[in-house]
Amino acid sequence: MASAKILEQKQAIVQSIADQMKNAAGGVLVNCQGITVEADTKLRAELRNAGVEYSVVKNTLTSRACDIVGFENLKDVLSGMTAMATSESDPIAPAKILCTFAEKNPNFVIKAGFVEGNLLDEKGVQDLAKTPSKEVLIGKMLGSLQSSLYSFAYVLQAIIDKSGEAPVAEEATEAAAE
Image 1 (spheres, helix red, strand yellow):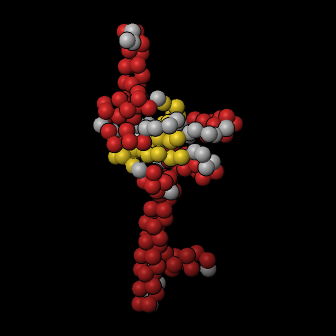
Image 2 (tube, one colour; image 1 turned 180 degrees about the horizontal axis):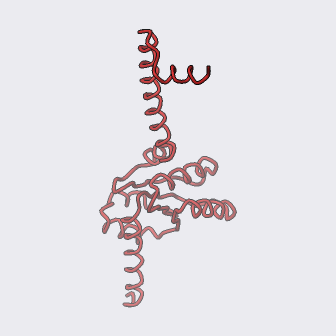
Image 3 (cartoon, helix red, strand yellow; image 1 turned 45 degrees about the vertical axis):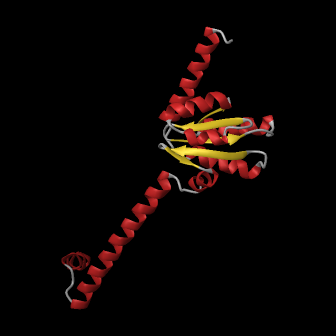
């Protein structure tokens, strides 16, 4: 029978994993068995630079944390050597980095993930990884808005030019040039 001290330690670990999952904007579970130490070190450095927390987790403790958080369906993928990557600020970063790494390392397998309380299967994680970053999406949106405004301005200018009336600003510019 386990001692009370060991039981308390395991309960603290389970609560820590549960808190990590609750507070994460996004997370990914992977099978990290069979990758080299060198590759793992590079992966951990890249994840750390992106603000992603990455650790190998015990399946039994993670299973109990899933019960606490309400991610019971994740328990199906908890076999083999499991690692979890989570980010509190960027829901896409763990998926993007780990899917890119998995493409280069066939032993590294994406198992499942979660984003803002929603569970994802392997394909869902891969689809999430293909999502452009927030900055790119904002840039595209602003570009679309800007092109609409330019189009509107061109249409107004064409109406003015067709009616034959010169805008007041052009007259002022011509007068200043003389």
